[in-house]
Image (cartoon, rainbow, N blue to C red; front, side, top):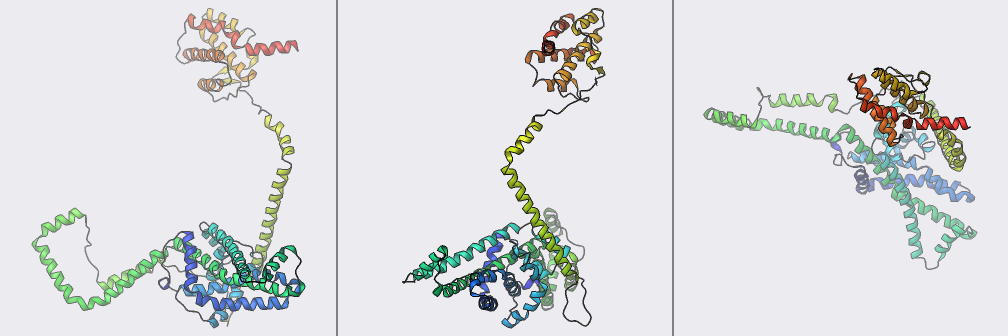
Length: 517
């Protein structure tokens, strides 16, 4: 099959536009679809209706519904040929059924993949590409990046359309039934008191209505999923660009064949062009320079150009060809499935079962969590209010901030050191005392890598305004002495000595409470 034979305009579309294109494809080729599909549906529905006991006839529609993947494969076979303008007769369609049953993953489609909501989107990978195992999973992951959600909504929408068709047929019967028997039958379906004498014919009517719904909706469902797949392939492999190049190559081949008839005219035209260039070379040079044209130093002959184009088109980047290796029995014209397919199917079945069990466990856990949420929250409440223990550092900026390293009267000792001329030691003692209060009494989360500015930012939200102002002044004077090596004045330092008791007021309050206790 060639891309140039496609009966649709190949271009990148949105997912919903691709679905609409699938509906249009069914409307265009409905004559080639309806007869094979109707006969296959009849071949499945008649044995189901005749072989089921009368007590189980109400589930006949469910049995036919379960065989939808078989109908989908025949519809996709016809649609894929019609897409490339290949007419398929009724005999050809039914002759392909054995191969469609054996080599398109029908077993998995009728068992553990039966409830897949993206069935129409994945079917072309199984049937047309023939991928299995790891290549199939990688291909699905690539295609599912776009279009998968649209395929899910397509399945949901078509299920509702089938119900609408069935209800419409019942409404039609109600409109043209003067006896009211159809209305009584519909009411009896909900009441459960079906008349035994007319039960068989009414169940046959229900079964026939459902078959008509399948006959009307399923071709549109398969075609829409197929066009979603084609649109995704166009996005991934740039089919529109490839077709444009192929059309360009065909036109060049036609021009090559026609060039032999116009050689004299071309020779005369070349002579006139050369004469014009000789007469006005400067004008041409100015024009070429202004337009920034770049001309090749030599031109290829038409035959060489056509050969060059074919050489470029033969590159792997411009050809959608893949090599597939498989085991083939000797003296056999028909490829046989690999022996590993059964084991692969079993593994995938086990994986699907485990996945379903995992989802069931998750749902049960969520339900139990909702039911016992109050008890779970009561268990977590103590953990939530428990403060994270922090270990304060012992040294900051080279200063020892252990409580045991400080004297009992910090302000008095600092004043004495200041009077003795030990300015750095006095300010250091006050600043160390402030750090001990912040880290050990107030449990401020100060780390070894914090700077003086970081400590002020950490203390501001939890410290009173007057105490924060004291800490800010102390920090500024300490930085002036420690880093700038400048002695502050007595006027600046005196408020630090007198205001120390007010700064350590929370500490003194805690000590008083401990003594009273």
